[in-house]
Image (cartoon, rainbow, N blue to C red; front, side):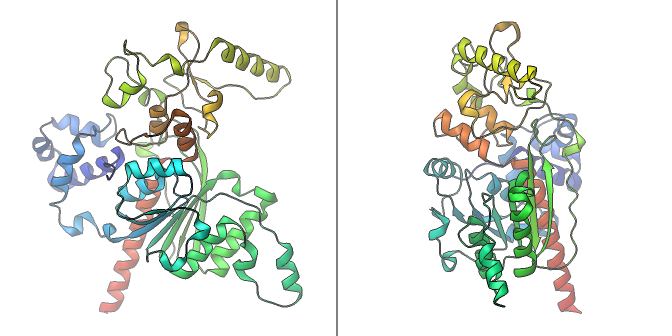
Length: 414
């Protein structure tokens, strides 16, 4: 079953309709006040998930020149995880035609949330490029690995060509480069940890950049983006965007409405809980005790933090309140939750975020199903991407591709 639109995508559609028909008319059609619609558009108030179906029918009536041509772009989802990159690209209007992910638990979550018209293939090393459909955009959150340069140096001394085959052979980036070479997508979006730039003393990123630009002939740009503002989390990741066209492109990625997001927005409501909150609340409507740290674990984390404080180190737990922004959610969060502990004040020991709160912290909609254990869910969200960041990037990429298409049409007509 296909996941419903994210709140950001719904807001974009709402904004488009308001520009075309006026906020008052849109408000009347939706059965809400003009002020409420304005608050949704400005992101002062979260857009309710139930609004999406009404917008779907309304938005479908828009003329093509208003909606744009972005729906025709096809993409492949490599190292897909639970599909965070896919959600962002789909929200921007693209269509997924191929998926590769090897972890069986991630695949379970992926299949529970995404349209299953195509099979999710496992180990990318066993994927033949001939079996991958043609596509416009290649998306991949590939792991970083060091490259062996010894073989390259030897071949250089013999005056032989080597190319990316020898520079990257045996690494997972090789599979990405091979697909780009054989399928020649119009663009690609690659995501990784920010330390990719300094990994293996900078050699890893130097090889990646050389392969993409020199060997494969793409025009690339890269930037480390902090998700703060898109979600209430400091999360720095590097994004590498490439286009086959040499036409200049420069992203201008800004947070929605330049606002500062706060943790309280994603926490469970114990006053007015929604359906997505209920599995994590007890019979009294409070977050279940299984997420509260035991006395033993809380004492250990405090002693550990104090030990490192006295030693002049910065290690320790991260205690947060609703008005705060969190540290980076990691895949090891299931172990002790120390990087993000929600203060319970005088009520006692702090608690971990629940899996649903982790999903929200990564920008996943409440309609996103979590069919795995808490441990697996923590790993999956900690390894995923911030969906609204991907959507913002994808929207700019697709806008650029639309402009390139329009330019080609004008050139053919002249």
